[in-house]
Structures are given as structure tokens and as C-alpha cells.
Amino acid sequence: MSEVDWLEASASRLSDAVTRFVASGAAPGAIAIVGTREDARVVSTGVVATGLAEVPPTATTRYDVASLTKIVTTWALAGRAVRDRDLHLDKPVSSYLGSLTGPGSAITARQILSHTTGLRSTTRFDEYLGTGTDLAELIIGEDLEAQPGERLKYINRGFILLGLVLERIHGEGLDALARERFWRPWGMDSTTYGPLPAGIDVAPTERRLVGARPAWGVVHDESAALMGGVAGHAGVFSTVDDLAVFARATVEWAKVDAYAQESFKVHATDGSTRRGLGWVVIPEKDVAYHHGFTGTSLYLSPGTGRFIVVLSNAVFVSRDRERLKGLRAEVRRVIAA
Image (tube, one colour):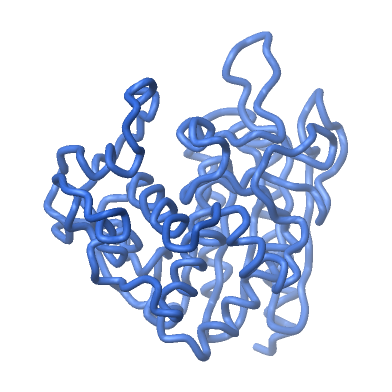
């Protein structure tokens, strides 16, 4: 199948899947892009937010991408720091923080990126309020759920810690670092940490209190909110156009960079889930992907340069994952075809 034929067939399948997803009531609307190195197709359905922004999602509508922040910020910045020898994947991250001691002091960047830290899996930073202790010290000082490197378990805390490490290494916030080193040079001009002005060009997420306004232009993730909206695991807003740019740039990066290449190899396994560095990987299908809790996903095929981005604010409707899981499974089939 030629690239043009694949693109047309994939766009049709993607359009059907996204339309069914929104028609089922799983989200007020969604927008997706499927592309190759040379071309792309955008599909959109529904509205940005029922009762608040009754307009169709467009390629410039900004969504809270939630855990895609791990990829478009922390994974990318870690790779640049590795290249510049400012960060070593197998050196304890505590050594970049003044040699902190505690149960988590031996955790490495490689273990954080592959989700094998053994750190506490629940993230409740409200417990830390008023302690007067540095956040990195609190995370490293907590009891572990498993020994570092022992098992794969998806944990936000690790990427939060790595984000703090990167800020200490460079002496700048993650928002400035990502903007200066990746987003602007790559032409991702609509990608940013919040807050953003609420409006029809920004998708609201969850209404947590009945009778109150939903989170709209402010980060959905509670821990990132307590961190001021800028964190290594969540907080970024972006568009399908910008994430398409990121996907293409990542494919080109992986041609020449050892860290990027290593990221798409299996580093940890839990049942059918295999983790590279940052990404979930399916090596035999040449597929890597990541999701965001709000209803977002990024998939790419490093070898072929094909990619798919799906942005929705499914959490605006519900935190239930079942229909979202169905959509994501179908998109994986499309990118692997």
C-alpha cells in the first residue's frame, strides 16, 4: 500500500472511530490528525464543550493534554540533557538535588522514564501542604512500594521528580525550558503551559463541583495545580497541528539521536504492556504511543514516519475509561496497519 493510500484509508477509519466515540456520548467533541512525513488529514466531530463552547473543534483548539506532558516536555528535555551530558540516565537523580537521602535516593532517570522506580503510585500532594519541606525531598523521603528496577508500574511521581531535577540542572522552569529548546524551534507556537483565558478556542475539562464552572484553561491534574500548573507529568495545552509537528520532529530526531532510539526499545514489561523510555512501545509493529487522562493520545511509527494524534476532553463528560479504551484500541490498530 502506498503512503497516499494508507493515509486515505487511515483517515476514513479514524473518522469513523472518532465519530462513533463522540456519538456515544463519551465526549462533547474530538479532533484528530493522521499523517505521514509528507501529508496529513484532520477529522473533527462534535463541539468543544456542550453548553459552554458550542463550536466544532479545529486544528487550533487547545486541549489540556494531561500526561502527554510527560512526552512533549519531560521526555524531550531529558533527552537533550543526556546529549549535553548534563543528565546521566543511570546516575541517582538525588545527586542532582544536593545528594538527598531517603528510600528513593537511589532512583535513576532511566527508572523514572521506564516507570520502574517503585515510588508511591498515588499522588496526594495536598498531604504536603504546610510542611515547609522541599517537594523533591518529600518524594525521595517516602517509603517505596517496590525496589527500584523491580517492577513496572505507571507512576506520576517519577516524572514530577525528573521535572524538578531538570529545573535544578538548568536553573529555569520547565515551561521556559520546553519553549526555548523544543516548542519554538520546532514551530509549536500554540503549545504552552497554562493558565489560558477561557474561551471557545480552549477545551474545558472537568466540572468537579455541581453548580461551579469546570476547569477551563487551567490544568486538570490536581497535583500539577498544586505545583502552580507547571509540572513534569501534566500541565501542557496543545493542538493537533502542534502535536503533528512534534511527531514528525521526533521521527527525525530518532534517526540521529541514541537516546531517542533507545526510547523505542523495551525497557520494562508488565503483562502485555511494554515500556520504553517515556513511551509505551510495540516494537514488532513499529509503534510507540502515550495517553493523557483528559482524553488525549499520541501515536507514532518511528520507522515509517506515520503518526496519529487524538484530542478530546472526555473527562468533561465522565472519568469512565471504557469507551475511551475502545477508541484507543482502534487507533492502535490503524497506526499498526
